[in-house]
Structure formats: structure tokens, C-alpha cells
Image (cartoon, rainbow, N blue to C red):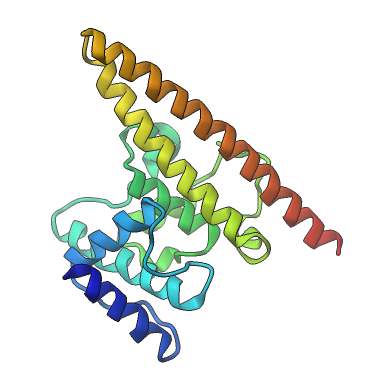
Length: 201
């Protein structure tokens, strides 16, 4: 049922000037989960897709604020990345890239986002320009970062167990983490090259 509602919101957003789509927090949660999993119902390289994502961030952030939570907690991005979920990583990269506006965040999260730095990718200084000239690669970079977070969480869960099966799981998750890191580096290089080429042109 929520999938149908999400698709209806996409069509509604495309029918007029794109503004953040209004939706309930439950629908927003599903949109954000799909976004982090690389199955977003809207293409963030389009104005309509960004309107859907921005609406989801606004709705979910407002619900978290009502519950007394700062979301997403950008302070953890550099100081305690292990506490971040794949959704939070995806949202913060979306903010840095301009897919999501800082004004879409709620309360204290706005100030934290303004202070956020992407020290993980020192070669990528201009993600907003990258969103214009290398959007598909930037989206894939976001998806890869989210996958890395998921594998890291699974690896840490396996580390807390001492049986033989946990050892094999740790090995598999470690391999997937390494593949994700390699893919992130490759995508970062592609995005950086495209940004540099756009400046030279």
C-alpha cells in the first residue's frame, strides 16, 4: 500500500513545479529506506525525484524532532561514524550533494549539517557541482557508501559472537567492506575527473 502511495506522490510532484512532497512519517520512512538501498521511487537526478526525497526528509525529521531526537545526527558523521545508519549516511551525502537542502532538516540538525565535512573523500571538494555534471556516478557513490555501512554493521555484529559461523561471516563481511571501499574510491575518482573536465571546458 505504501509503495502505491509513494508512486502517486512521484506523479503528483511531476505534475507541477517541484516542491518538497508532503507525506506522513510512515511513508517518509519507507522512501528513505528505499533511497538508502538504491531503490528510490524517484530519480534524484531530476527535480521531481529530489522533491520526493526532500519531502521524505522533512516529514521523517519532523517526526524524530517530536520524539526529541536530532536526525540525522551529522555530528556523528566525522566523530562517531559507527553510530550512523545507512539511511543517515545517504541523507548526509544527499545534503552535501545538494539533492537535499539544509532547510529540509529539522532544528539542530541544520546547524550540524552546515558544519559537516566529507573528510572521507578529500579529493571531492565540490559535490554540488558534481551533482550537475556527474549525477549518476554521485548517486552510485551514495549507494555504495550506504552498502558499506550495512556491511560494517553486520561485521561488527559478527565480531560480538565467537562461534565458528561468526568467523566465516566476519570474513565475508570484511571482503564486502573492502569491495565497497574500492568501489567508492573508483567512483570518487570518476566524479572528480568529471568535475575537473567541466571546469576546464
